[in-house]
Amino acid sequence: MNVPAWNVMVATCPSRTSLAKIANKWTAMIVIALSDGPLRFGELRDAVAGISGKVLADTLRDLERDGIVSRTAYDQMPPRVDYELTPLGQTLREPLTALGRWAEQYIEEVLQARDSYDDRTGPAALG
Amino acid sequence: MNVPAWNVMVATCPSRTSLAKIANKWTAMIVIALSDGPLRFGELRDAVAGISGKVLADTLRDLERDGIVSRTAYDQMPPRVDYELTPLGQTLREPLTALGRWAEQYIEEVLQARDSYDDRTGPAALG
DNA sequence: CTGCATCCTTAATGATACTG
DNA sequence: CAGTATCATTAAGGATGCAG
Image (cartoon, rainbow over all chains, first blue to last red; front, side, top):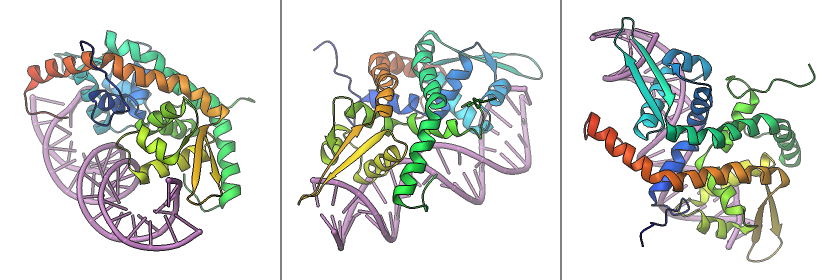
């Protein structure tokens, strides 16, 4: 056939590797942060509070490689590097901001469910 | 204020922990698999090809604890356990199936971007 | 069949020091 | 400032055996 049957439910399908990268907290937060426009490396690190420089650099390189983020380095001293979503990256804005909104919108239900579950099972539980 | 400002971009906000759980490949695939209706443990393991029993059990327990999946055990021999999305879990169907569709829809652009990136930088690169 | 417990391996993340 | 390199730590994942 002309159209390969890309299917994330197939263990060896390349689309699953792609899903694994976008279904990731750091990717989600970075894309959300870049949704309002380009940001410098340091601005991004501040926006995604708690991310380490190494993880941010690693994740940005992956996203650039996959064509989701573009990197613009200005030849200055001190250096300045801007990151922004590519057209492909823009298509991720909606689904990933939706995930972020879900987390904020339903966190209270989730916390309540956890309390309920822990009551039913036993206090010695996870995070 | 009455409404706490839940914000996933704040490192210590509980909503970020919640985002970290749903922005996860296994969670995404399990929710996608359960979108068509309840499945037994073994059916789920087959549906999410490549997942190990341990990871499936661990992830399902987490999802049950967060109120996203409900678990029904029938007192039979051999055992039978059904999993299905709760009403809360249903609200995750759309954003997570969207992520799965994105991975399948844009995988060719992603693969192309990777080739391009690797050409520009050097063949000795990542996965 | 389900799933927990255990052990082991690998991947992700963090801390620090250093360079252009 | 924006990284890279290194090391240390932690979390995720996989394999196996066993119990209800």
